[in-house]
Amino acid sequence: MELYTVDKNPIYIQEFHKNLDYAWEHMRERTGLFNKDWSGAQQEKSKWLLDQFAIVEMYARISNMK
Image 1 (cartoon, rainbow, N blue to C red):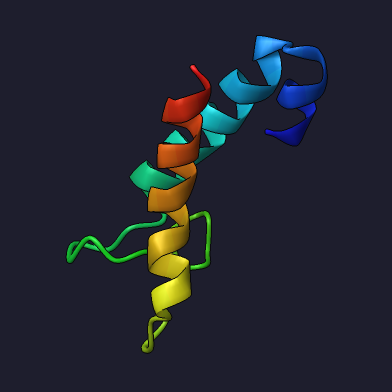
Image 2 (cartoon, one colour):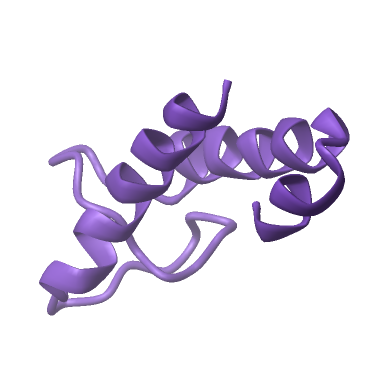
């Protein structure tokens, strides 16, 4: 996202958005909470608040760049 601020090449934001969408689809449990495993195969017993809000924050930052 920082590269986009330098040269305004939209590919940086598009690819980052694709990664976020993948995380949204594959890293969440049925409860809606995120795991650290991008494959979704392993689930942690404990969740960290920072991990949960990071994805939401990144979506918000992307929406402000478009």
